[in-house]
Image (cartoon, rainbow, N blue to C red; front, side, top):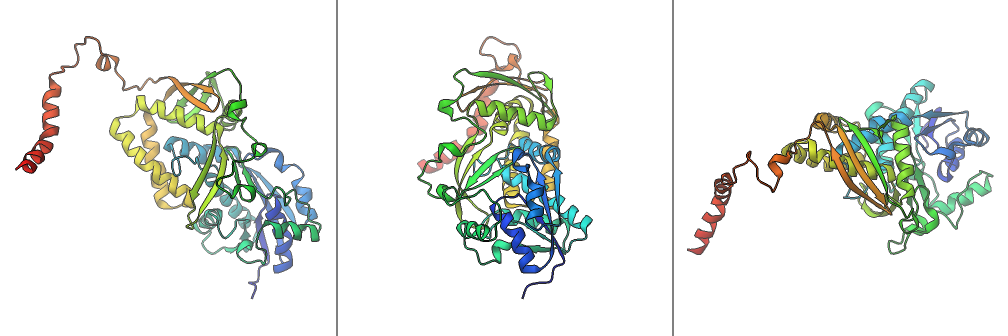
Length: 401
């Protein structure tokens, strides 16, 4: 039996899934549907969205500009953490979901809605990310997840339903793959990409040039950081949105930031995802180079240990869990010294660190030099080595008896 719902706030993109969902929710629940779209940097995808939503049956559409919040409160913490899921994925979708879901709950409160709905499938990670955020912020909210309820089995069914009910969509049977775009990245899944042996079609990429067709000349860029946060490019101070947008453009011109990954979803299955993340790819290389100067060895190792947990927690949807808040606070503490500049060279898919400097540098040329010095007694190393070798020598002697 369908649960009684009076008003639902639907996370709406205007794409195939949520366009069908808007019509389906009204037909299935007989409820008012308020559409909500978060602007996290998807650009031209927002054009004409209000007209489309109202024509499809929404009572109203909220379009919320969350770009600054997204970059400052979600992307920059991931940069400071040097967060990578399974070694390569920079978490572009994972980081966007909690900021989107958080504002959705705020709109549901404002509207007096008794439910929220999302377009995530019952196979993927996004359902978890959305719903863990909903419940963390509004424990008693009703959640409608149409992909777990309706009769449709796949995107081909949705395309047919949209055609039957005159719902305007751009997806076709020839190009059924799903894309997710924000200021940090573009992701591609499904359809023609489901064969992990098949190379992604050249025409799907939106942010980056193919490395073999990128600019023939290398380009040097100097990135400034303050306490781990990117603040300038070539000496010019920039706001968070402009900073990331500029690096996306520069990285894209040089073919930087493409990833093709078979990843382990939280629900237990493997899936193939293709990603473009040019700006943050540059920032991670630069940030790690600056940390190599400014962070104590053991502090850096502790931060690296947290990086893996940070990435997993974000990927799994636990952004608003207490352990995630603790990790972010701890990582922030490690970044107090991470101020300075890094010079990188961009060339045909590569980010090459060409220089780094910091007022907090722990690198001392007088100590590290291979030339004569008066600050390090090399004889001190003998006792250090013998003490560290003690257990090895003891084991060798026992084994020899």
